[in-house]
Image (cartoon, rainbow over all chains, first blue to last red; front, top):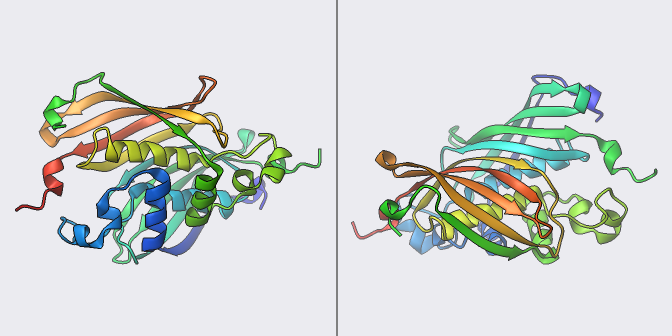
Length: 142
Length: 142
């Protein structure tokens, strides 16, 4: 898509399943090895009752959706505000919802609301991303 | 540490080296497979000249430092504001800097500034985290 094709209110949705394998990998590469995320036995005795995803892994899924699909290739991530409301469990299928809140055409910028909704309908993560979208920046013909 | 031991102005620093292996793994598990992050040949022709880390991977390192070391185990991540200023390159050793900005003792909350500084001294990522710190929540004796 081109910048000019985006409109305020436009939405994007996708569903992602959270796997223990991805959470274990995230723990390893980020360094956040809290057993609440990676050890089912430990997590079963916690207030959560079972392993939960790192909040930042949820935000990483939002980041990937922005960069790869909506707006997509040509997105430069400028900033993010986020609140973590509810834990996301391993093996949950969550819905990522992006919505164009504001356009700033003079700088090819978009402000999008960024939300992750749990299987039970609760909002797990909510916030707002600021991006610049300019696929020409990434074309190397010049 | 206990919540009562934290003071406004208190700082934490650590240095982390960004590796292509970690960035490739982050691309796989987040789904952000932009070749700017993972393909040196492609990235060499981009405006960046070489592969860059996902901004969200930088923020993941901040998240890990908060959860594991400062404040550490017992940290519940409530929210984050972040701005991405400069790209972080593969093989860069970046400094993560956390600083206690505000204490809200009635709810055992801390607001911390969260910064990543590049090898050349430039600020790559800057922002603010809101956390609750209560190691008792994670003790399962009761």
